[in-house]
Length: 208
Image 1 (tube, rainbow, N blue to C red):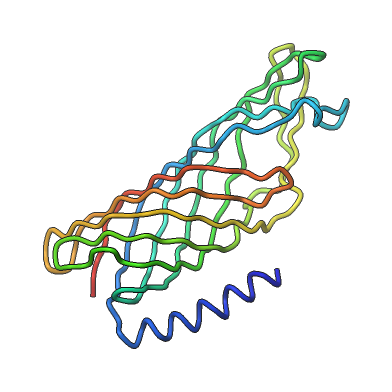
Image 2 (image 1 turned 60 degrees about the vertical axis):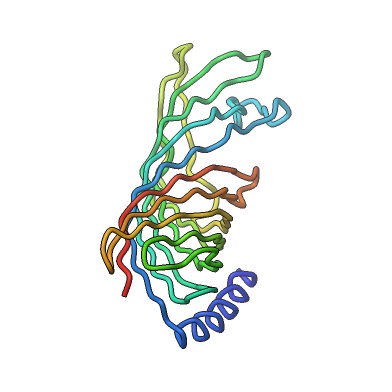
């Protein structure tokens, strides 16, 4: 986690500088994660990984954010992500499928960004960030495959996993202090086989 410590130090410096010219915002939002399909036939291993192909899937989440700064800004986000339904598929030499539930997880992120437009009514920005995903479940789950085979799914090997993102967002203010937000981001998760996702976020924001 050495890289996370470096991110934390840089974040602290930017946060202090941003707070000196504070334009603070607190947001609460919902989100949809669109996770890309993964898997290679070469990953197939009898008795170890009999379903190497993981379908694309979606899962929902909620979160909050707090940022400081007028032109450049920094902040933090916390996310709670629900499980989703995903289909695991075997290779042609051992065709079978099973639908399973993904594991719930939480994420904490350091946020950095730049406002392209920032006035009383509209804020348009680019942002990025990095942090840690923490898996909230560690039990082995059992399912029955399409061919009637008992299938056990192990939780991720690591409880804590690094992740990072880049994206853009728009806030529209309906009053002096409150408004709505919409943003999109590309997410990268540093699993053994990297996970990539598009994330759509919508919520409310309060400026103070």
